[in-house]
Amino acid sequence: MNNRSREALWQDYYFLTKEMKKFLNQNDLDLFYELVNQRERLQEMIANAPVDDFKSSSTGQELFLRLKQ
View 1 (cartoon, rainbow, N blue to C red):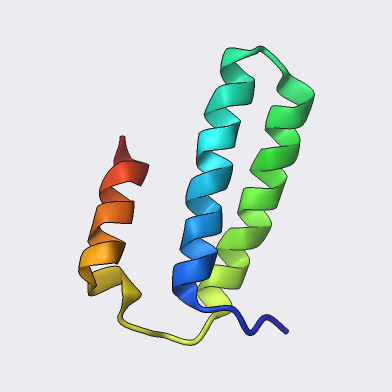
View 2: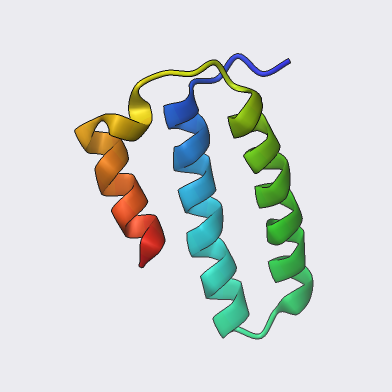
């Protein structure tokens, strides 16, 4: 079971997203797909994490704006 906050999980999600872009630009598809798999597992963890107000916080809003880019 995961005891991490949604904020920590979303921060990891953002990190993986940035890394995916980096390795895609380097044409390292093996590592890119590994990161995709890690991010999918992280999405499950986020879905199962206790609900909190991170998504509506200013920090959360900033992070989601960066993810949309």
